[in-house]
Image (tube, rainbow, N blue to C red; front, top):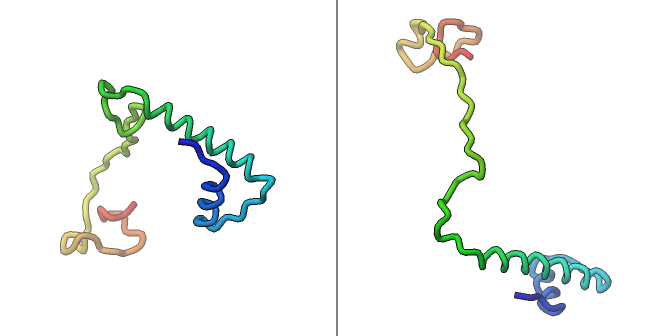
Length: 92
C-alpha cells in the first residue's frame, strides 16, 4: 500500500496536523517506507512459529518471604493500620 500526496493531506487533516508543502514529500517517503516494511513483515509465513508474550524468556523477580507474627488488631481484621507496627503482616 502506497500513500500519495492527496491521501497524506487527508490523513493529516483528520489527525489535525498542519503539514507544509515542503515537508509533505519527505513525510510521504517516510510513511511509504514504513508501510513497505509492514507489507514485507506480513508476507512472512509464521504458521509454525509459537506465540509468545515476550521475546525473551524472563523470570519475574521474587521477594524473599518472611513469616511474621500478627498483632491482635490484625487478628480481628486484615490489618491494623498503625504506623510503625512491627508485628503486623501489613507492615513493610
